[in-house]
Length: 142
Image (cartoon, rainbow, N blue to C red; front, side):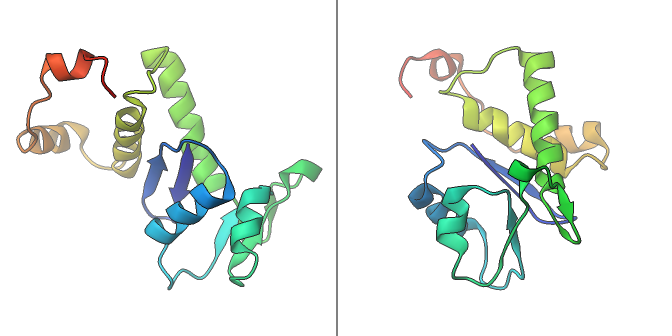
C-alpha cells in the first residue's frame, strides 16, 4: 500500500499490487500535480528512481537513523500509517485483501475529517450512498 499526504492537507491510502518503481510512477502521475513544490519520501530505491530527475524530490534517510532534516520528513504520512495499523489491530484484528481498499478508504476518510463532528458527517454521508448487499460483500469474486 502507498500513503500520500499533503502537509496540513488530505491523506490518501492506495492499495497496490507492489511497491516497484512503475507502480509508484503511475500513482505519482495520477495523484501528485505538477504544481507540487516538493515530494518527500524515505530512502526507497523505487521512489528515488522515478523522482530523481524532477528536482522536487527530498529524501529522509531512515536507514542511517535520520527522521527529520529541516523541512524534510515523512512524519505526516507516517502518523497516518500508525493510526491505520492500530485501527486494524485494535478494531478489526484482520482485514481481507478483497476489501483492503475499503478499509484504507475508511481510515483516510476518518483521518481527513478528524476535526469535524463525526456523527453529523456520518449521517450526511450515509444518506447519499447506495447499499452494499450482503451477497456482494461476501462473494468470493474480487
